[in-house]
Structures are given as C-alpha cells and as structure tokens.
Length: 218
Image (cartoon, rainbow, N blue to C red):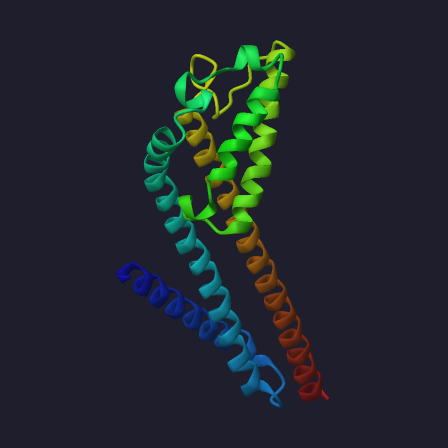
C-alpha cells in the first residue's frame, strides 16, 4: 500500500510538473484566445500519461512478484492433487514424446485446464495469451528433436524431460515475457500519443509566433 501511494505521488508530481514546464516553454506562445484552456489541457494530458505509465510499471512489478511467489506453491499443489499424472510420477521423456506428441499434448492440456489465471495472479487476457505461447513452445520442442537441432526451451529440464518443475518454470518464463511485451506496447502507445501532442503544440506555437512577428513587422 505504501509503495502504491509513493508510486502514485511520483506520477502526479512528475505529470503535473512536466505539464507546467511545457506550458511555460511552449503553450505560452499559443493564441491568447483559448490559451488558458490549453494550459489546463496540457497539464491533464501529461498527468494522465504519467499516471498510466506508472500504473503499468507498478502493475508489472506486482504481477512479476506474484508469479514468482506462487510458482512454488502451485507446483506443490499439482504434485499433491494430481499425483496420477505421468508428468508428476515420472516426468515425460521428450525424446520419446517427439515421436508421438499425443501424450505430451494430453498431459499439458490436463494441466492447463486445472490451472487458473488467479493461481499466478495475472489477468485472464494475459493468461489466454500465455496458453497460446505454451503450445508454441511445446511445438518447438518436438520440431527441435525431429530436426536434430538443439533448441533451448524453458519447459524442459537438463535431462530432456518435461516435469512439473520444468513446466511451472516454463509457465513462469512465458507469463513474465507476455507481461513485459504488454507493458512495452502500452508504454509505447503512451509515448506516441504524447509525442503527437507535443509536436502539434510546437507547430501551433510556432505558427502563432510567426503570425505575431509578421503583424509587428507590418
């Protein structure tokens, strides 16, 4: 809670501060008609962008911490409640599974059905993306063995077995990767929107300065 308040305070101070600075440097040259409204709009724009970016970064830190924290507990729960699965009893030999992927796919489907987004503390839309990536990663395992190419994969241990531990590790790596990409996309959108606003403001201020200079010269 303290961290949230601190993050929020930093976001507000930074957003408002940058907005006021931009007003003094750029918006002051806007046409007098509507300049006061532009002052307010600028502060609001910078504030919202700052809040969104800080919220996303704070959310990422929470999700990262939750995923790493819950991974061990989830592994123990699977071993306790689903001890009849081959992946729990012996693990799955990927070398053998690469020749017949039905067992591998069946086991993974069983696991992903019992696992929930809340288990890892992630939103449902991220979880759905993660499951899609999990299937791609497992497909890479089969392709790598069939093509005799060694491909590093977070779902497989050093003995080329898919175990509960390696599967949870792979899930953790995949979730963190999806979260990171999501954060990068959101921040990139915010930066682009802010850049557009800044460029439009600079253009407007420049045109007004030229108009005033031309008027004074005449």
